[in-house]
Length: 345
Image 1 (spheres, one colour):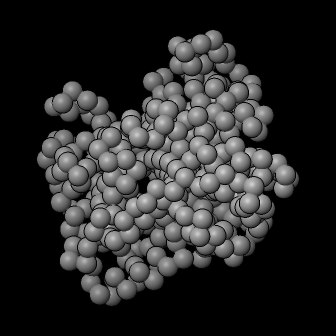
Image 2 (image 1 turned 45 degrees about the vertical axis):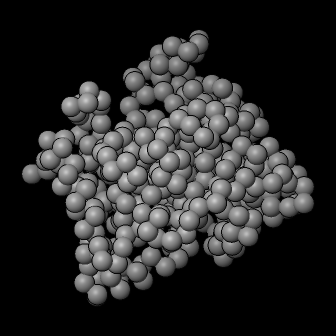
């Protein structure tokens, strides 16, 4: 079932905040010389190495392709990754979000991807949980896998470990939230927490957004993560110039990205051209899935089926009816059905 929520926020130059990354970078517009260096990771920019669909694999007619490409203009997709261990060079991606900036319709869309999604991993040519891709090749491999599985065109990423989340929450004075009894039960496995309305510090907020067993599983966790991001975004609107700069100085060393400073300037220019009243939307992928334990003994979120889920994702991002899945997506979808035994009738 599709999950969607819209929220209007004011958009001002130097105040438009997009995830933890933009929160850190916004200080560039108010005092570049005082900021620490941007941790830039070099990545290839050619479509083949990024897993972007090749021309020969496109399944559209010329008319369909022309209509689809016209809708892609003005929409920028960025991969946001949170890793589940301190540091950036090991572990699995605990958070995977497709950030879609639509400057045509003044929208920001965040699509959380369940980490247990059964997917094709390009480098090892295996079918595993999508978050395993980070172990095989870091953020580049995860971006390549998502481009390949979902017919996306992402060329840049932002990576943060969960020290960044904890630091951000502490910097803004905590995260006010109403903890349910199930959430409190899960959190109490790691310390004493009560249900009810409270303000969590960085450590508590980090625990809160990562629990899942009795708290809605991966979908519940993805929702809590998006809610926290939006809370930080909302809080940032009240920050003054000095506070924003201080926040940026603390956050930037905790983030790695494929963006260079010149790229960031272009990104801020996009925001500069957007009108006030930005609409934000939230989604969770797969939109339709079956939870299943497969032959390896592991639980997966099996897309039901991958082809239809990718169509929904494309229609969500580009608001199009002209998209037709590539040959690659068709092949991946068929393999997943045969491998998992989960068929959509």
